[in-house]
Image: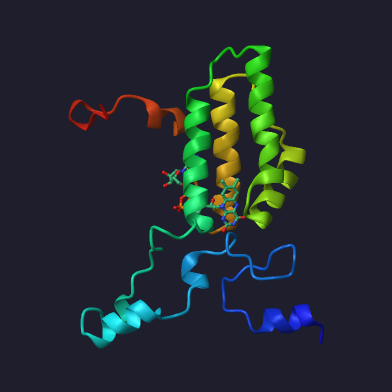
Length: 173
Ligand SMILES: Cc1cc2nc3c(=O)[nH]c(=O)nc-3n(C[C@H](O)[C@H](O)[C@H](O)COP(=O)(O)OP(=O)(O)OC[C@H]3O[C@@H](n4cnc5c(N)ncnc54)[C@H](O)[C@@H]3O)c2cc1C
């Protein structure tokens, strides 16, 4: 058996292997990466402050983001940027937006996320013609990831509603 397949046999479920053949931290959700019970949690369980089935699944603030935190932050950035993109962008604004989107499959730290996005962008090039079209394009790309991960799909016809004023008692101001 090769080293790589030998290694993958021993991997915990959910652990992702990076392009270098090693476990990829930024590609893996923290709950699949961390040891089942951390030293701090074992101490808390021993001291009676935590039940063994109550171990928190959140990362300490000093740790780098995992695939989920990075994903949430990136989608927030991308959807917000699209929402503030002009309906009639100048050629320069279009070029800058294209640069931003085309750099993701190269620079996004989660390697398998980046390569999926790169593949998808070959058949569905970014539509930077205006705010509505761009928001829709991003919503559809986000839904493709949602679908791959078995998550609920977002209704892309409602993308812009997220940015409209809420009810009088639900203001974001
Ligand atoms: C480009 C990219 C590729 C990714 N690829 C992978 C991958 O291959 N494997 C992997 O495990 N993770 C991947 N991720 C991370 C993944 O998409 C999620 O961000 C992560 O799993 C956390 O999910 P979440 O349920 O908290 O909500 P997220 O999917 O991060 O969404 C955040 C919020 O956005 C809203 N939302 C959901 N869907 C849409 C939509 N279609 N349009 C507009 N708003 C929406 C919802 O309010 C949701 O709560 C990728 C992230 C990015 C940015």
